[in-house]
Amino acid sequence: MKKRILCILLAIACVCAVPISMGVASAQTRLLIGTGGLAGVYYPIGGAIAKIISSKVKGVEATVQTSAAGMENLRLLSLKEIDMGLVQNSDAYNAFNGKMFFKDKPIKNIRGIAVLYPQPIQIVVRANSGIKSFYDLKGKRVGVGAPGSGEETTFRRLLTVHNMTYDDIDEKLISLAEQAAQFKDRHIDAMWYVSGVPTSGILDVSSVLAIKLVPIKGKERDALIKKDPYFIKSVVAKGSYPGLDEDVETIASPAYLVCLESLKEDDVYQITKAIFENLKDLAAAHKQGENVRLETALIGSTIPLHPGAEKYYKEKGVLK
Image (cartoon, rainbow, N blue to C red; front, side, top):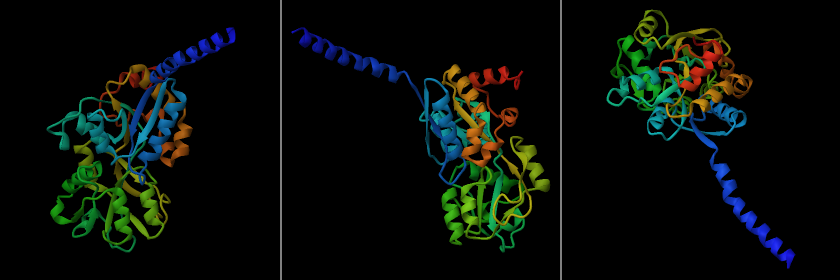
């Protein structure tokens, strides 16, 4: 009889323990990070950041979501469908300040965590195309990015400083992955990436075709940087892609990790701390991870920092 009573009590204890354990699990903070397509750099870097957060930040679990990259991530952040995202610093600036595509609907619920790495503009053409400058794109079929994407926004800015419009080219409003496929099939003459180096889409193309990059330099580059100071001078180093035997001057819009303003201060502090204490994991995920450094984490920051990130930078002496 006593055994039977003991068994019943144990069974009741087990049943009662279930909601308690479920309650503990529900206390875990889950974050969704918007990245980009599989052909870009945002996806592997975002995946590495999610892994760092999940393994190093107590009580926080992060997963990634593929997307159409920066502009889509900003839209998802505005709808609170993701918690963090990788974007171009220029797009973050325009979104927060209600400029360009965000003129009628600024996104004020975003805050900065860290500037990660430079994203050089890379205009890819066939090595034998005869295209040597941006002006030579006139009359050519050019992939400019998905409609409303960060790539298309930046391309429009370049057209302006070169006194050109879409009337001067045969623009193809297609994604990065579509550009790579169409370039290999010779359906377009030039493809356009704003991405870390090397990017898998260009590596894929260069494995089957001889390519070169079109430089962006001179007075046109200077005019763009003067007008939009979030752009910086950059260089794609020789050897970055097969057949690239000399450095190519260009400009870059750094990759920027941003988040919702509503995230807890301590969570963002711990996330920022974990990222910069585990930079080797970013470097292992993609070569661009080697360019993520604490000393450059605020260079090109274009929106207010999240208080949690600000606390970490003050603690490390990066921010006064």
